[in-house]
Image (cartoon, rainbow, N blue to C red):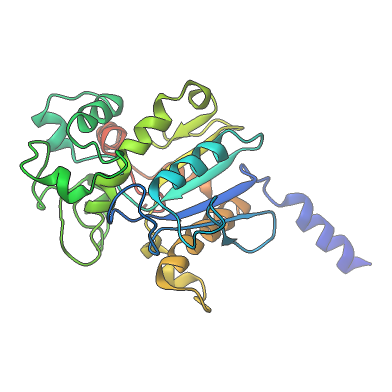
Length: 271
């Protein structure tokens, strides 16, 4: 009886979760938005169930394409229950880029970027858009969150292993589409651009790097890309269940650093 009372008391003190569904997306900037890519993986979990692969809308297809992933994210954010979606690509550029182009907000950045990087067009490759594009930068330019890690590369560092440059340039236009959807604005928090603290009941879209948690979870029979999507969903749920996500939403930054991160974005999990 004593043991049962003890267990019940633990259950009563367990933190209430902020979200009901956790989605991890291992992104890819290869080929075109309508190209089906093995490297593009989506995993999700809810409750106590283990994260599992989400199948593409087209049951005949074995893999996702970026255009279809954008639709999935949109529909997930329109759901009745709050979810958190972690996506493996940069959401913005370094402060130096903002200064160079006289941009004062993330929304201004999104609009400026999409004027020259139309990588959401069905058959537009990042490599095509990259040719003689004036809206670029140097691989030496780093965001603050990248300086706080040992493995993160610049969003301008193309053509090297472990780079997120191509996926970043492929993914940002889809963020703008979500951002401009009036149905989503009132119910979705784009972290940290809408603030570091998240209002209860809102869904969250956040940048996240699977490499931060990859070794934390057993890979089993998953491919490397499948495992990256899996660990994002699994880590988000674990941290929410532990009541720790609020701490990760608020990294220990000074006020000037917070202002910088509100433009550049931040990698959820970096503290």
